Image 1 (tube, rainbow, N blue to C red):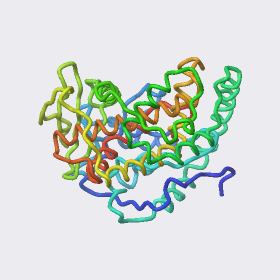
Image 2 (cartoon, rainbow, N blue to C red; image 1 turned 120 degrees about the vertical axis):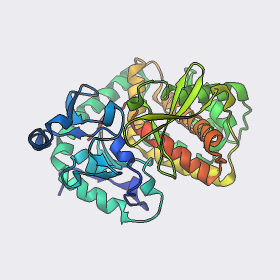
Image 3 (cartoon, one colour; image 1 turned 180 degrees about the vertical axis):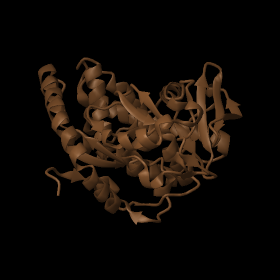
Image 4 (cartoon, rainbow, N blue to C red; image 1 turned 60 degrees about the horizontal axis):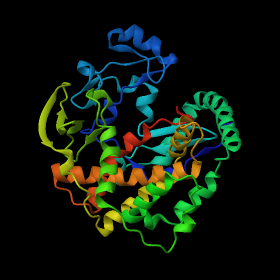
Length: 372
C-alpha cells in the first residue's frame, strides 16, 4: 500500500503485449539503479557505461555505441530475468511532480494491438516495486512545484491547470483545424492572457506557408542531431528501426540494424514535405491524442519548464496553448513526412504511425518533475 496516491487514468482501456520482433525498448539506454549495480559489476562489468545526462549514473552499453542494448540478441533479451527496473517499466512512465501519474509511451506498438494484459494491472504491480523510489522523488519534487507556483504568482503569470485542461477538453474538435492552430500560435506570443472561450464561434484563416514552416521547424528540431542515440526512432510495422536525420540539405532516412550499423534508405528535401490533409478518421484519432496530452502531467511539467526557462515573462496559459498547437502541427508534419517515405495517407493508420513515431520524443521533453 502506497503512502501517496497514484493516478492511473491514462491507462484506462489500454492493453499491452510485448511483441518479440519489435525491440524498441532496447534502444532506450537503460539506467542501472544503485541496487542493481553489484549484479552487473560482478557478472557483466564490460557492459556498463558511465553517463552524465540527465544526471550521473551507470547504464547498459549499446552496440557500437549507437545501436540496441548489447544484451539484445535476435530481438530477445539475453538477461531477461535480470534486466534493470527501467527495462521492466517500459512502456510505463511514472511522472513525479505534485503527484505521481503513470503515462504510457505510445511509441510502443504493443499498445496498439488491443491484445495482452490490462495495462493498469501491470502498472500497479510495477508501482509496488518502485514504491520507495517514487516516495523519495515525490518528497523532492513537491517543494519544487510549490516554488514554481509562488514564482508565477509573484510575476503575475499564474494559471490554474484545471482551468487550462477544461478549456482544452471542451474544444478538442478545434485542435485539428489548421486555422485555429495557427491563430493559437500567433496569440500565444501576445502579452494578454489567453482564454480559448474568446475564440469560440470564430473561423480563422491561416498563412499556409507560415504554418508549414512552423511545423517543419518544430519537427526538425528533434531530428537535427547527427548522433543516432539522440534521434527519435520509428519502429515501423515490419519492425525496422528507422531514423530520420535532418541537416541543411534535407532529411536522410536511415535504418539501424541489429548489429548497430546505419543503412541509408532514402532522402527528401525538407521543403518538399508539406502538411497533408487529415481524413475524418485521422482527425478523430488526433483529437484523442490531444486529449491524452492535455491530461499528462509531463506535458504540463514541460510547459512549466518553458515558463521558468523564459524567466516568467510569458503567461502560463499562453505557453500551454501555444505548446499544444505546436505539438499538433509538428505531429501532422511528421505524419506527412512518413507519408512521403511509406505512403501512409493521413487517415487513422497514418496518424497512428505518426503518434508511434512522435510520442517517445514528446515524453523526452524536459519537465519540472521527473520520470522515475
